[in-house]
Image (cartoon, rainbow, N blue to C red; front, side):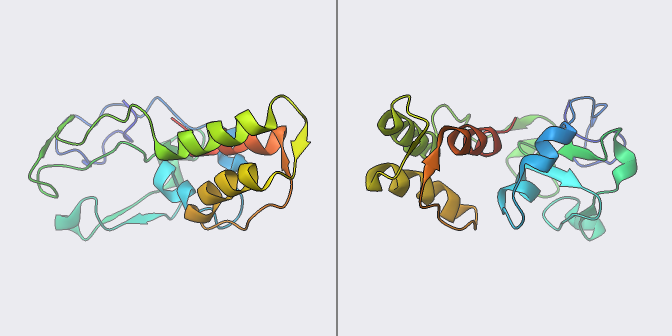
Length: 155
């Protein structure tokens, strides 16, 4: 289970919170990347949509040995959503995401090169970054692409 144990977030057996984000993943997010709070919970993060009947949930670093837990795919409990009970939800399982298509397009244009300034590649790549609240890049490197995929699809 990815839920921090003993928090009551799911309204059932929360699990043990043993699947934890590595320190490397935590530090891989750029400052102001809006995906971070929706992917991992870090000390002090507040989630009003979880434990609504208690005024929300504030994450404390003591819940894990890496001072963080995953947030992605924690849907809450029946108290917050009518379609949820423990680990059952009507939320669709993600098979292919639009951001994956955009990043595959940028990668195909990069075509094994170490970098590109192709307008088409940058347009696809920067669309993903813009949704995350990050500034556009003017040059796309293979490392930029790999890190963006890592952060975008964490977990």
